Image (cartoon, rainbow, N blue to C red; front, side, top):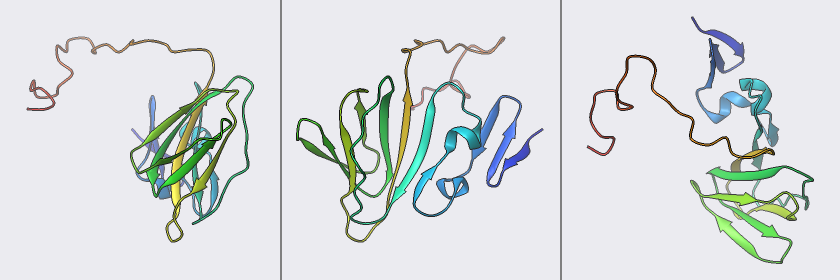
Length: 145
């Protein structure tokens, strides 16, 4: 049985779902996905910035970050002076001590990107099938079939 945990978020036993990015908040800035979805293993935010906006530079003591562009185009500038354009579906990993800043590369479209961060290392491939199941494919076909 599922229930409405936060506006736009449905949760059940062992899961929480936001049907789209707009369900996680409105306007510019941070949308605290971790809190809204009940994530406890790592930090995660959805950030929306207006056309041409540039964030300040920052770094972390321990937290490695992964940036994933959902909508729009961002440009990331790093402490070594390089900058890289990241389009929808693109991603960047950044070490904790690496200085970085983000700029919305568009002069007309908002940029929406997800940032996940954490420390402590990779857990490894620990996925397994539920008892009695023999395939990860629901109808026993390969995913590309």
